[in-house]
Length: 134
Image 1 (cartoon, rainbow, N blue to C red):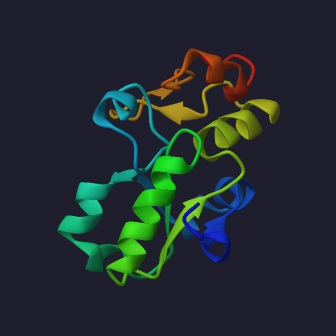
Image 2: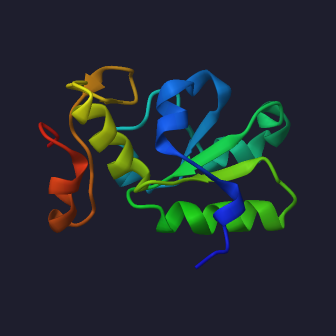
């Protein structure tokens, strides 16, 4: 929809080398209050000081990739060409890959506490988050 094929980062790359990326949570506060990928920043954080995030790729995520795709398109249109979208099912792909690898709590609360909770915004999506996710 947003023409982002050339600027999509695979879930496996983020899991394998998270230190290579800034992770931007494009979801609503209601969703991110439940859990986030460890180390995530918000769109507001990025926009307040984009120069802080210029030294490596920024990877945006939301639950399935649509909202984050819109954020990536918006930020790229503003000239932030280091901003990418998380592919492979976005957050649900991330949690599915992590739980399949045996990680019981692949996300964290904002205070850093590990959790297996995820806000899927639609009950029908919950099974896609992986075994043991709530």
